[in-house]
Amino acid sequence: MNTLIYLKDVVTLKLDEKKCVACGMCLQVCPHRVFDLNNSSVKIVNRDACMECGACSRNCPTEALSVQSGVGCAAAMIDVLLGRSNSPCCGPKDSENNLAGCTSKPGGCC
Amino acid sequence: MSFPDLKQPFVIGSIQTPVGIVPQVSSFLTRKDRVGSFKARLGINRMHYLVEPGLYALGTPNEKSPVMVTANYKMSFDHLRQALTGHNVWILVLDTKGINVWCSAGKGTFGTEELTRRIQSSGLAMVVTHREIILPQLSAPGVAAHEVKKISGFKVIYGPIRAKDLPIFLDAGFKATSEMRVKTFPLRERIVLIPIELWPALKGGFIFSFILFLIAFMWRWGEGWTLALNHALTPVMAILIAIFSGAVLTPILLPWLPGRAFSSKGAWVGIFSSVLFHFFRLALRVKITGHLESIAWFLLIPAVSAFLAMNFTGASTFTSLSGVKKEMRWALPFQIGAGTIGVILWLGSQFFL
Image (cartoon, rainbow over all chains, first blue to last red; front, side, top):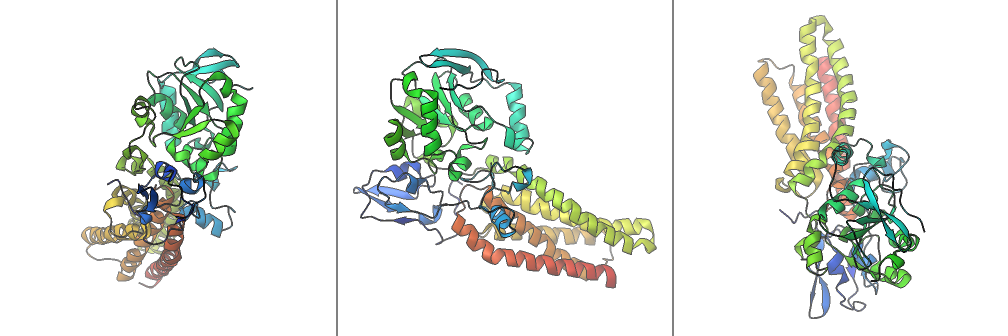
């Protein structure tokens, strides 16, 4: 049970193949095997597995990858809706009340 | 140059380097370390469980030893040193405000800027002769390897996701297998994340069920207090069942539940438990207080369970922001709707039947 998949066809991940130099860095940093490298070009092979953590775009030396990264955390978004926090995460805020449910996520409060 | 305090409880000695005295730590976790981790898992003092940032020595490293980078959340630091029993390495702890690697990387506190600043302030370039640093793969959302190289001269090597894979990674000459690069969400991990979600739910649930308890109890007071108590305990039990369904059962059963959205998974568990609850009540008492109350719980239990399950997206390791937004757009109105109708029906069942 090592590949849990969330919703289909929602992620904002984009690859500009013209800019890609096939360095393979995205394959190293992606935690969900979204990419594959063959014939010296990178392909998105498992798009729905992407969790938009932003590791690939951050480490892409030619800016070939783009993704609107953020925390997939409902509790944090409810906090934003209620005006309890202005950024969709919690982190080391001044009080424990600001701890939304993000416990093990990029950008979550762990 | 600045060095971490030698007086921290896990420091066992010190090592002289060309730039000064570096605290030495061991791979052996004490009882105090374990108790601290356990408490942090339960949410006690979780935001103040930290290590002073800076350079540490594990074992007796020299100028050729590898450099491992980690966050200053005490549990991250402990996982790392525990995994490296018998190895001599440098550990560079970044100031991530006591937040673990993945979360702080997403926020950018475990990031290019803090890393390059810490390389500078620790004098790392004078402690080691090589120019490589090993970062946990999950720090990649915050760190741009190519920029770190440009600014500091150090080449970032992304190590495995799990600290326990580090010995194999080091022995293989800094090569991670593709299995080491995949973030899974196994049962054990789902279970340890339950308390963090469960406590706030129980707090809210306690207040909610107390109000319903009072209403039900007062209203039936005239029928004798045992009957009233019996009757008033129904909402307390129902709410506990709803919380257990959404915040405990759903995380445990996550991979096997139908639907992709967490709300659907939680709703299914809620429907199943409300059916069980209904038959439990039927079995206990021949005459049920009213069908209206039964219908109310058939709405309320799945709604609460679905809501709590939806909140578990933040603890999971595979949900995207776009996905959660999409889920919330339909699921939240549904939960609020079912919850409101449920409360109205329940009040109706108390006053009119």
